[in-house]
Length: 465
Ligand code: BGP
Image 1: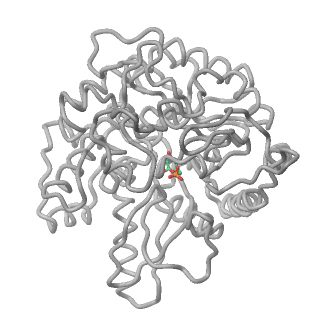
Image 2: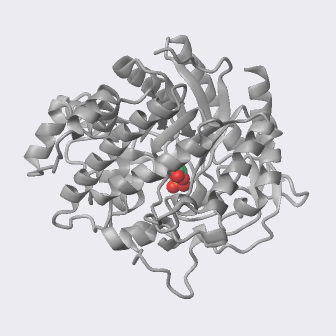
Image 3: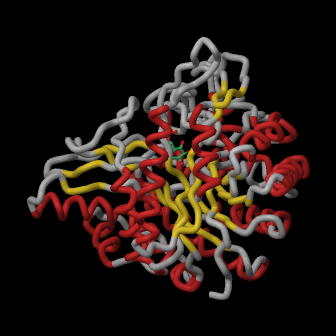
């Protein structure tokens, strides 16, 4: 490959459109799947694909980044961020998913956003789809298990690449694509209850379509923007064996490969044998069209982006559950947990970087790492978020160790550098930011932005590393 990596390590932050922008019907935008999801646990199963009266949908206003992006970007740039990962809301570009023409007002918004980021010295990193799809197209065609999505997606990326190709070098296709089989509504617009007959089949079919779309993205990028980097993006917080009992070790590995299956396809270009066996064992049969496998084989991604938040453990008999940070199995007695119950495991971060580098030998990009916790605003208005500072330093130090180990990592984007809506719970109280936003879980508050102690510490770290 003739493309070169950035000269400077890309320390930055990461956001997702539906969790920060708000303005859910502004300037021609139509609802996305994210706009039908209320606040609270199990929120993805509580959507009806409709927007009901009297229900609070956090994405509708979120933190009004759409309106405040200039001042928010200025605050973010004040930390010295070298990059910012954003996502594009498909529904600003094609409001219904299948419109005859793209929506100029939506395109202009991202032009301005990208220009402003670049002007402030923040390299844009763009996720093409982050947990949202045009709702009207989902209603009309069904979810991504319908092949009709390939055409809709082809038109969408064509517009994005032609419009923003000169501004954006680093792209990612589907956020945490391996969640398609775990949280199918979020990842693929699939409205299925766990245990639904056919749900697993639909999820795997949707994942197959995402693999084809991923390859289409790489192909089009090579034609239109030969210097661009196209990454796949997975949730790769890991799972250890709970003991050295061989069945626990194998079981943990089997769970791990349910995730790695996705990167295997998108980086190595084919379904691995264990994935074929898994599908056969579960009685799944994919509909694969002529040419799909060739496309997947030829157009593999340039890098692997992933999120890492925590780890878990597996013991025989566990029936692991999932949340937005991946598999939840047995407790690990060696780790402390955050106030939202996520174990903190910086050493695991070094382990995962090494695991992925050893497996793929492609550049790695840490697309998300962060700590969601409660913040207390002091009477003097300050926020002493020591736990967040420790979490960041502990993980950043392990990242440097991984780089010393020889892992090629070219960027790290802290999840939610400004407080945004939680994907998993829809809460504002689960805060990740270095910048506080005065809003509560019901969307009440002034929306005022306030710098936390961690803001200064991340700034210091960037300046010295
Ligand atoms: C990842 C998502 C993000 C995000 C983050 C934290 O799964 O890509 O969108 O929000 O997890 O999860 P949560 O918001 O549930 O704490």
